[in-house]
Image 1 (tube, helix red, strand yellow):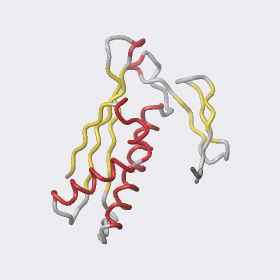
Image 2 (image 1 turned 180 degrees about the horizontal axis):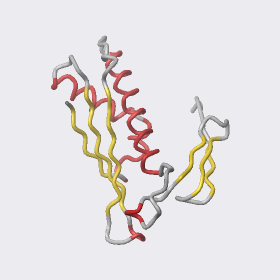
Image 3 (image 1 turned 120 degrees about the vertical axis):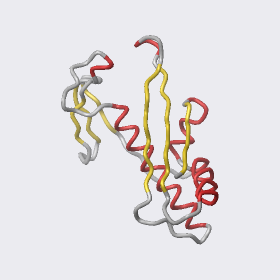
Image 4 (image 1 turned 60 degrees about the horizontal axis):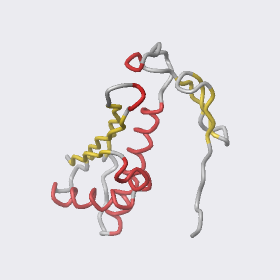
Length: 139
């Protein structure tokens, strides 16, 4: 197997600290949301970062699947990923993902088929697989 790309990031301070990538392109302040007992400071959090990564990765996979079918995905197509932490206590939080794909100018049946195929090749969707509950809607 050939490795095409790798990325590394380091976090300091956990949910209330900083994270940065090894190449210096990503530098973010982290803050714990008040819902998780934090100060709800100005920084982002792991769930927001994961949502952005999931949305971007799935949209790239959608474009790849559509291209293989000879279709163009409109520039204003988008994916929204909503990441939730559910559970009974801080010790047993469960991650869930809700994905909404909006692919204008492609009929809903075709768009649904494209998204289903994209979920099978999206690296993040594959990595989380059966470990994360995912709900996908296509508009």
